[in-house]
Length: 186
Image 1: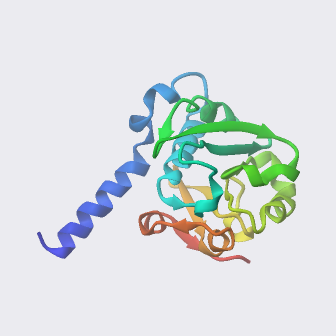
Image 2: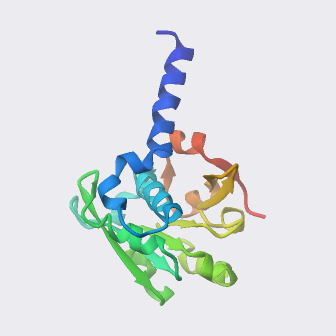
């Protein structure tokens, strides 16, 4: 197999992981949750597979991924339906939070669009913590978040701020970087 064919095959398989989340998690996503929230929740869970946290982030090999949701959005319900899932042998625990003082216990923070006026405060609260920040707020990654969802041609896409990930001590897999649109802080 030539290198070009190998790369095309590899990229095709990686794209399938992200473009077909409804096929990957259908029982977890069934119900009355809006489709967009289901897709974003599936993306978020898939992001875990392409992010490496520092070894000190988890107390033991079986500790779950702790996901915090700040704000009001239907993604919380979509994520909670995935609570029983395992990713790399770790469970998922989803909690809605309103207090930003205890973020060090979380691995992922989803910032809902209802919090768009507080983005700078939220990003400031996770500075220097090993937390992957994700949001659907317009321009979130450019404002210092790690991953920001956006719509393009009726599809949900995502922007990635590599600098934000590095500051948080997170390593992003090249496959994730290939699929996202790379942005920098404003």
